[in-house]
Length: 409
Length: 123
Image (spheres, helix red, strand yellow):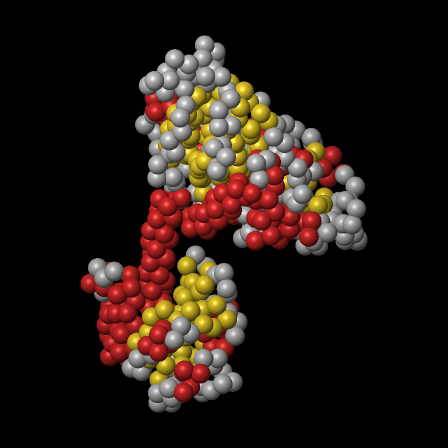
């Protein structure tokens, strides 16, 4: 069988492809890019409507995000479950679908048939083999869309998928940094006799879920939290925000740090069953004589007492948050003499691939001294990071009980 | 996605997944997929961590998720790990007291099925 090639059609096709891969379009921002792409697709296919629906992975629904000639879809917030209706089928099967009649039996969204669309063609938006959305066009007059149309539309969809990925990751990055700014205390509390300093460095790769918190209770106790949520990006940051608020709420209810972690664990296992996190929670007496610490899978603090080498505090380990229900955690009380410094940290500070964790802990203990906390933080960051950007998030928090004789300082 | 870095060997009805030397955010998702595929239909799945020298929170997350999923489906996740740096992390996080750990691969494979586990497929 010979294939007859129509030169005019080939030329048209090339021009059409040129139109949707035009370099000028790359200079548009992502949202304008989608709008322009839909206009061009509509023109090239001589269709009347074009729309992009994006997958919301949490709900498993496609959400109308951009449209040309079908703006009401976006305005009314149309949502289509994956696997159902026209767009839902494209998303589930990951291949083009052509409809030669449009009614309630073939299409879920009434806007399409009410508008009088007679024929439709749609293709999936794919990124790394996963469906991220659907692009479809419609015609108000009956017509037969061809496999050539599907091919061209898929080319446009591939470009749209790239723009969509970049739109989402940009939005996520903005949201994560806004969240992090709101979650890290803007100023440390000012408590007589307590000197505090902290550092927070987001990782060089994807941002993770480390946080720290310092607050006082109405009783005058001073509380410290270090946490590390497994995962990265916006989902981890959102969970970290929820854990921070929940822990603060439980801290007001009960003085026992192990009980606070137990309540937090129960709350997380019920509402965020897929999340796990390490948390340290410590409550210092108003006099600062003693600090009561409970651990949920987190490293204990490093303690530096004047005239002695710093060491990892001997604190009873406790199960990580989110692993198993009903775990009991212990409380360890440390005596804090004047001049003693406590250094709380997350694993990003000490963990290096290809090295056992004890080496990192030893390096940290070596670097920690009972100096004024700002100085001690700077020394530790210099010794453990130097000029090497951290892969993981790092949170570091230091408390020093004012040395005797510094009272008037 | 089957991955050459996580070879699965089935011996005596027990699948064994060889974990990589370092489990971190760059490969945790792949390991998770392999494990979640194996859990339905097996009474036990062994994660061979005898070669694993590093496991960050992303790696711990995979172990815990696999363990929880297995519990819910009548399967048991077992770790084969003689000792070493990762065991230290499992002790700090308390996970060593939750997920059954064996000091050798042979012991992990030979252990009796957990009470309530599904029967291993016969034949």
